[in-house]
Amino acid sequence: MTIGHVKLGDLVKAARRDNLESMALLPDGADVSTVGKLPFVVAQSHTSAQRVLVEDAESYRKPWVVRQVIVDGLGENLFTLDGDRWLARRKPVAPVFGLHNLDALASLMLTTVDEAASTWHPGEIDIQEAMTDLTIRVALRGLLGVEENNNELAIEVRRTFEEILEWITYRFNSPLSPPLLAPTPRNRRLRKSKANLQAAMHELVAHRRAQSTRSMDILGQLLQAQSGDGTELADKAIVDECIGFMFAGHETTASTLTWALYELSLRPDLQAAVAAEGGALGMANEGLVTSLQSMPTTEAVMHETLRMYPAGISIVRSAKRTTELAGKKLRRGTLVMIPVYSIQRSESLWENPNEFNPNREYDERAEGSLPFGLGPRRCLGARFARTELLIALSRICRQWELTFTQDEPPRPITAPSLRAEGTLNLDIARRG
Ligand code: HEM
Image (cartoon, rainbow, N blue to C red; front, side, top):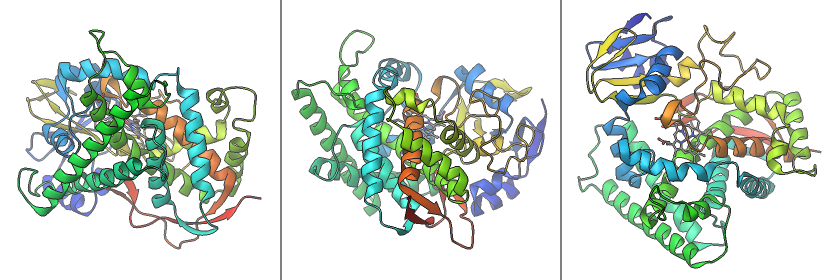
């Protein structure tokens, strides 16, 4: 295990320009890098990431500051809870993302994607904007079971949620900005949006409880879920989790779809193969989930996109007790950053790592693959996300031929998901 070092001044300068640029400073071949004399280290090899997230996960927690921004913006949920309270919540909630209702969810997703893509017009489209819109529609239907556009509640949930996301992004990007307690106009607006969102969600939960029909969306499943003591989950916990899922699943999936469609727009043959798989989807006399297992090209595109463009470019932890990493003693409170983006583009793990190559041998459990995190806090919505990605990519390509005609390639930035700077415009034409 080798230890490298990054000068604090260099890191600050690079990070001011761009978080991705600061990752390029990490010394080659090191497992862990220290930064100046700060209580901050980078676990930059797969082995050290595995140690922090899996083998020694008990010694770490999500840092207070990250949790606090999300709690301020959305309330407490699985993403922010810690210790026993997290475990008590994860146990009853995890099964709602199981396989038993995936066919029904997949068919909700397919309808939503087909409907959304059929409203597009030939010509130029900002695919980043279109994917943000699409994933919120899928979230409203698949997570909350609400029909968009003809439902005032859906419009209210969507509007307030977007305002809150803006506040969270601002707080992450401007850590020295006034905390929520300060009565600034921005913070006052956030408080109002948060109260509105929670009220709308409580109304939705009460409405659903009053209905006797069982429903296969995630909210419907949560209403059936049982806590460890055999009681139903409280309405407040259900509201908090649904809001948390919208937060964790919306921008991340939109970002992955955007980059995948951009890469496809450069490769007409690959795109045609994905379109053919989209055309065959649901045609065979079998469940959608079974059909999704026979889409090798779309699946390879999805994996390669998750490798090259992980929506969460890094995962952060803080040591909750004294521990050791790569032979280095870490005191309690030390911040540890796992640079997912640079691990997944590491030359020691992949040949030509900066080349988009869906033909490369890929095993999701392979070393260095951690787009959904690892260990006990790994992504709970990974199956939901993968299902949505396969359906959306193949069905969009089935309806549309996409071409990138701009002079400059898009520049990835973090905001806080991996996004393209500005807009990402593609030309679209109906597929014949
Ligand atoms: C491509 C899409 C997605 C990516 C790349 C992604 C990535 C991640 C990552 C890296 C983590 C771990 C964070 C950490 O360890 O600090 C995580 C956690 C989580 N994700 Fe996702 N996610 C995606 C989609 C979704 C979706 C669609 C949902 C829900 C519908 C979801 C729900 C969650 C939840 C609840 C957690 C917290 C789990 C816990 O701490 O117990 N994610 N996600």
